[in-house]
Image 1 (cartoon, one colour):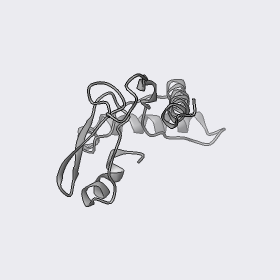
Image 2 (cartoon, rainbow, N blue to C red):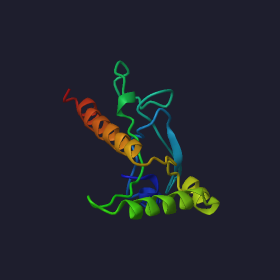
Image 3 (tube, one colour):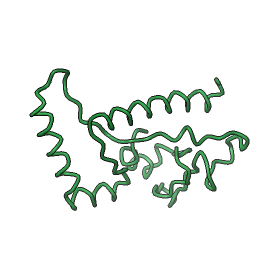
Length: 136
């Protein structure tokens, strides 16, 4: 699933069973039809016992987040205005509290930092697929 909150209703209903968290810790935020569900991680003390303990899976932990993208050639003043609106929304306590409640990461990056973050995430996703699929 792409995000935790995207699947929370399906997990609660029992139509999706989470099996692995791409984290150094186990995820303990889900509740299924029979109660709380702990989802093991890919590393650390909460590492899934099914994973090969001799391998380092920490490189499979993917950065996450959403992006505001614009078309190539968009007016810089408009881009800057959209970025300022986003910053104001993130700074609003009501939004920040909601982000925490639905278990989303808060990670604000703009311009070159955002592009570098996205590039790193893509590289890690490819590496994670190779490692976890045994295609390395």
